[in-house]
Image (cartoon, rainbow, N blue to C red; front, top):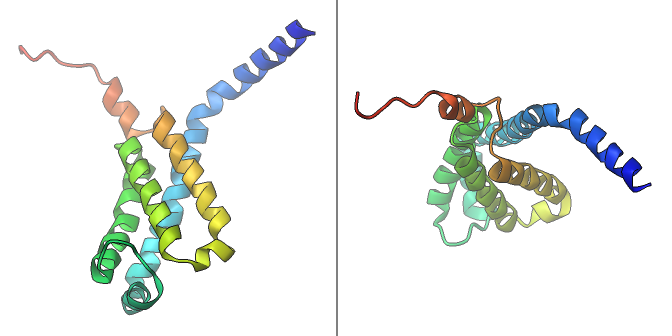
Amino acid sequence: MLNFLKQIDITAQRITEPLIPLFLLFTRLWVAWVFFKSGMVKYSSWDSTLYLFEYEYQVPLFPWQFAAYSGTAAELILPVFLALGLFTRPMALALFVFNIIAVVSYPLLWEKGFFDHQLWGMMMLINVFWGAGMISVDHLISSKPKQSLLQ
């Protein structure tokens, strides 16, 4: 029975291992799309964004103006890096922290969108711990042959 269970695990690993780069790409693109789209909404209705940051969101430690500009910039810039798989771990970590701040700052998220933020947080942590995978700029950069410094 133990050998049967081991064989099932080995078979499952053979099937899933080639799919890992696609899974990592999927998680990066999903999260990048969600946050970039949110940043575009903030940018396209800037007066509403400023109103929300001044009166609705309760961003800790930062003045609302700084939070509005930096939050919108983060939602527009970090996802591009994440989608490309460039500096994936630090960008995913920065978005993970941004995601936590968003949940803490906007109490209405607890009622309607908390599950989504948990899902996105887990997807970002996957890329923090496992990186971008083979389908990324990070992989292209790291796999190029290193040239000698003496040349």
